Image (cartoon, rainbow, N blue to C red; front, top):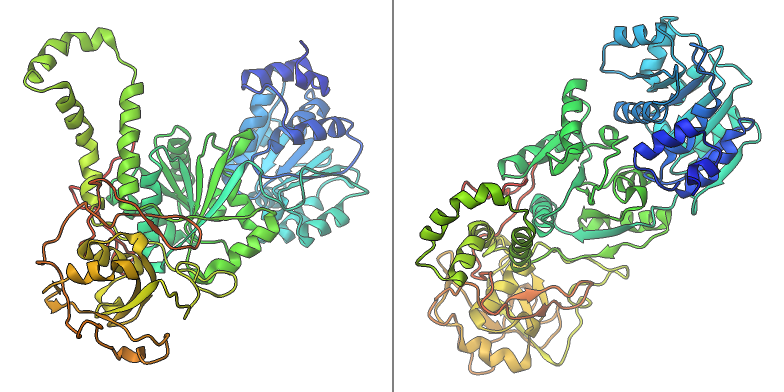
Amino acid sequence: MINPFKLLGISDDVVNAVKDLGFENPTPIQEQAIPVLLEGNNDFVGLAQTGTGKTAAFGLPLIELIDFSSKKPQALILCPTRELCLQIASDIKNYSKNTPGASVVAVYGGANIMQQLREIRNGVQVVVATPGRMLDIIGRKAIDFSSVKYVVLDEADEMLNMGFQDDINDILSTTPDDKKTWLFSATMPPEVRRIAKNYMDNPTELTMGTKNTGNVNIEHEYYVVRARDKYAALKRIVDFNPEIFAVVFCKTKLDTQDVAENLIKDGYNADALHGDLSQQQRDKVMQRFRDRNMQLLIATDVAARGIDVNNVTHVVNYSLPDEIESYTHRSGRTGRAGKTGISICIINSKELGKIRQIERIIGKSFTKAELPTGFDVCEKQLFSLVHKVHNVEVNESQIDQYIPRIMDEFAELSKEDVIKRFASLEFNRFLEYYKNAPDLNAAALDERGERGERGARGARNSDYTRLFINLGSVDEFTRGDLLSFVCNNGKISGKNIGKIDLKGVYSFFEVENASVDTLFANFNDIQFNNRGVRIEKSGDAPEGGGSRGGERRPYSGGGERKSYGGGERKSYGGGDRRSSGGGGRREGASAGGGFRDFSGKPREGGNAGGSGRRESSGSGDRRRRS
């Protein structure tokens, strides 16, 4: 059977090199671009998403077109970052490993320029460069581009976003007028279109999919939280995905450092990648990530360009990018080479407009997701451990010598006891940490400006009774905290609760009429932070009427104030909630003696930057990641 790359016109030496890399079939951009570029007669514009194989799309034709018997530069490839420069140079070296005389040099800032100059003087056909360092070398008159036949502008949109327009102009002015220019980009903003107009002559244009759209293999989700709960939300997402291998994007270098440091303190295998690191430090961080010795890479947009790492499962946007188009490049770190991936945004309610803008640009809808409950995380971690135990490879020859001693140790335990204790080794840490876990999901406005969580503001339902409670945001309660507090101590399920209206020193909430008596019967003489808790029936007027501003009408049964039943705080009992997703009322479901405590204790949460209280697991709660 003829190799598919051979059918595209690639020579045997290059086909064999590609096979050694594990390439079996060309990607769509490679299949369409390679035959066109092999002709070598036209300028070219290729629009395709990050991770679709653009490097091979232009790298393989270059190797076929270059005269490797000459030691003069014949191809110049410009790209925005050091990481991408190194990645492209490495790929082209691999493609040309069976080609006699082939030489490729990477030219980028942060590395020894003298070493790069020596490589150029020794003779090179392909130069891969970042604009800044390339201008330094041109300024030293250390390179002659008079023989350049092909110039490739990779990630052209990002180079322009980073302010390299003038640098690109200066570099291209040193190359021959009759060269062919190949431009590859994930998006086509007007600036990129101007490059095509100024430096190309009737270019062949190839668009894979629709312009500026996102990779079809990537799912897009967003979570709405309060700003101070961002870090806690990130940890919740990571814990709910035990096998996560992700890039987490922050807006600034300081943010990346703060988030990475706090994750490391909390026992996660993470590190930061930003512009203040030396090249040696950056290379070390990237090598750990490529080797999967690190689970979470915390990076800025600039530093993360060129991260071509296989099997990244998630991209997490801890902060949305300032340039909406940059989202395409971020999400492109996952779902590469035909694999699937998930791009997650952690936002506050004010950023919903940005999500809608991104949807229009990439042509895909986001799914509004709900952060998992503490019970859900514990359950997920438990069964992840079970699957690891079930699938672990046993080294029979090494373990056999210890089996008699192990069996003696477990002699008094039943099979069920051994399983329980073994599973509890890891599980107990999550169980302890998440037993008081609050609901981190913020109430977000839907597109009509209505409350998406629990119905439109001011809407009344005759099936519910509106109640007053003298607890509010000053007690550091969220809607989720208040729901947990009421359900646990009122001995009712979350599905019996309607709209929650959180105020400062008091709040209102709706309870199904059939559950009102049960709720009051279970409240008696309870205190919260040394203050008596009161629950009373509110007036029948909607918000803005008699009950506004703290005015309360007594419960119809004579105004008797009912309180907690004995003050006993039950753990892991009723009131467990499951999120229904979307915007409706969160449905309750008993955990069957599950893993959560709705006692109203201080909540988890805080951000990594230090504003507000930061979630900390403590020495007993640290969760190590392999």
